[in-house]
Length: 376
Image (cartoon, rainbow, N blue to C red; front, side, top):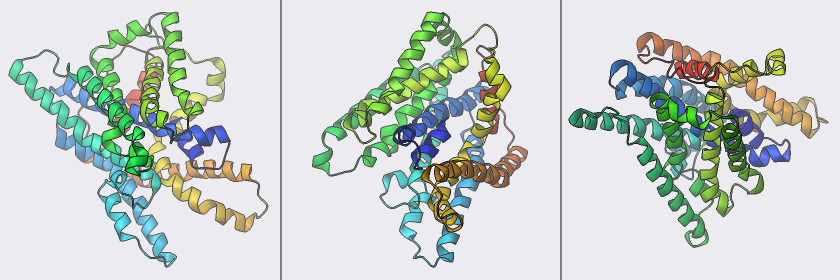
């Protein structure tokens, strides 16, 4: 769902899809916080420690080969077209600070910088908590996570609110609020909070979703929070402040419902979902979402002109859906060509040490989560 939302944002498709598709990145952030913290929590539960160096090496095998291949392909294309190479734009991309730099090669890679900074910060924070546990012999070394996430949420919200109120004075664009890591890290850490509860206190989430009416309230509240993107533009003062907070809380609620909709027995999918393999198709696309996300802007930029050479009368609707399908196909092919071979090499050299099953409470969606954690 997250990657499909982004595809709609960057294409000329249905207006509601284009206007609201940018929130796919916010959904990515919540899921990433949940899954990446799950890797570290699972490692701790199995080994009693967290190896930050090993974690970062494994992350590198996941992120760098596909990303740098995309940058290299961009460079070769510019050389082939005899374009002037924007070297100043490549430097922020290579070192992942493009979300703080006006010059960048691709507009969509800012979110990768936020993720990269999160990959550095989170394990260091958890290792610090483990060090405090050894000194104080605390039974739950990560018990400060809820308080830390709350402080971070309030701090980021206040900072975003201050900036939105002073935008004309500061003469900065809305992207100066939407892109920087220190203004968006709260959405990732909300996913960390859910990961902490899922791995160490699943009973708290089970209680929230134990009754049909509580699930209904959570569903309606989450839908209401997420729906703010339908009524406010991305560059509106509300969306840049309170709206971003509403989005990650709403997406977090949806994630909790997916995990704990039926906590006593594995949930059964509706017959029509089973019949048409909708769940399998969604999981299939999700497994390749990183490469799809990386390459879709290249497809968007070059595919339309190329297609119009052979089909000058093609209508906008067909052009859009062609872009979506080709972006999915290109992402899947290049994931199998670059991303997953790198992951296979990683798993031979640096095999995973954590248990990927996590907490056994919850629905069958958890086993999909376990598979995604293993691929991460």
